[in-house]
Amino acid sequence: RSGMSPAVMLEVDEGDDTISIVHLCPEWFRNADAIGLRRGDRVKIKGVWADIDGQFVFLASKIKKGDFFEFKVRVTSDGTPFWTLSTEEQAKHSN
Image (tube, rainbow, N blue to C red; front, side, top):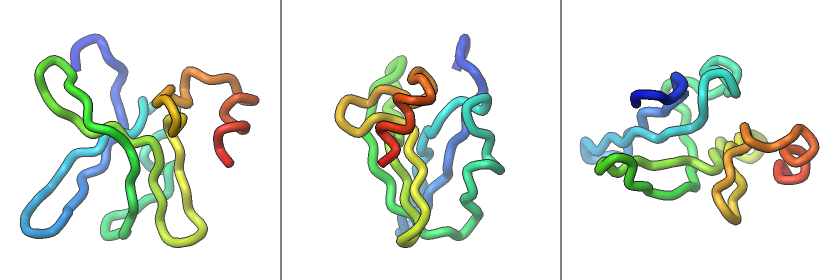
């Protein structure tokens, strides 16, 4: 989008030819390679749908893969992006 930083997004195949784009975070916060997800990974995603400039987009708050991988990008209770928080606040909400 105009005026926004380049972002990391996931293309998610939900079966039955349904593909959704999930917005994660700006590239400067975490680049795609640093996140640790690869094509074909099965994931669970929590987040919300949002209307941005008349287009509905899915904004992830947390992505889980298996029992040991979790990537949080927004505070679950209110949607605050992690990239707006201090390092201490990020640690508090990462658990």
